[in-house]
Image (cartoon, rainbow, N blue to C red; front, side, top):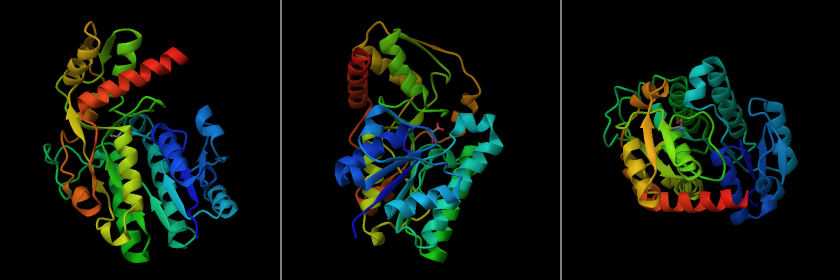
Length: 318
Ligand code: AKB
C-alpha cells in the first residue's frame, strides 16, 4: 500500500518545511497538512490541508479515515519559553497530542509515527559537553519535562504494544522560511533577521551561552532519514541524540560580521537565560550516526551564508 502521510502542526517552523519536502518526495496529494490555523501560501497551495486541533482525538480520527493515513508526523507542541508562561497548557497540549497519536498507532490505525523530542529533555545535572545518549535527565522546564515523559511513553508503547514510533532530540533549529514560536534558541534566528533589517541585535542570552544548534535542511534530512530507516535499524525507541554544531551568541555575531561588517550585538538577559543554562552545550550523536547513517551537512559558516542569502532574497521579494 502507498504511503499516506499526515503532518499535525504543519504550519509551524519545522512542520512547514517538512511538509514541503515530503510533498516533493512523495507527491503533493500523499501528504496532508493539518494545523489549528492556516499556513503560508506555498504550504496551502501545494496540497491538501485540514484544520485539526492536535488535542482533539475525534477530529484527528476523521482525517486518518478520510485519507487512509499510514504515517503521522506530530509536530504540534508548546516550546520552552512559552511553556514557562503557560505550564498547565504546555503539559496538556504536549502530552494529549502525543497520547492521541500513540493510541492510534496502538490500535493499528496507522503504521508508523514520528514525534520530536528535544535537548530540553536534559537538565542542569546532565553532563554539559558531549552529552551522552544515555545519561542523567532531570529537566527543569515544563517543555523539557513533557519531552522526557514523552520519550518514556514512546519506548513504553514500542515495548508493550509494538508501536513503530521514531524520534530525535532536536537541538535549536535555525531557518528562514517560517518564524519559530516561543523557543529559547529562537535568538539564533532573530539575530540573522535583525542583522539584515536593522544591522544590530539585542540578545536575550548572554554572550557565553553555548547551545547545540542545527540548520533546518539537516533537521528535515534527519527526520526523513529516521522515518525511512529499516525498523531493525532504529534501535532506540525513546529518542536519538542529534547534533550539528554548537555556538554562543558572541560566536554567531562574529560569523555574521564576516558578511555584514558593521553588525552590532548587545546583551540583556531575560528569563530565557535560566532555561538555556539548564541545557547541554554539545551533544554526542554517535548512535544516530551508527544506527541509521545520520550525517549533518551544515556548520556555522555554511549556515550563515545560506541564511543571509535566503533572507535577503525573501526581504527583497516582500
Ligand atoms: C526551544 O528553544 O524551546 C526549542 C528546543 C530546543 O526544543 N527550540
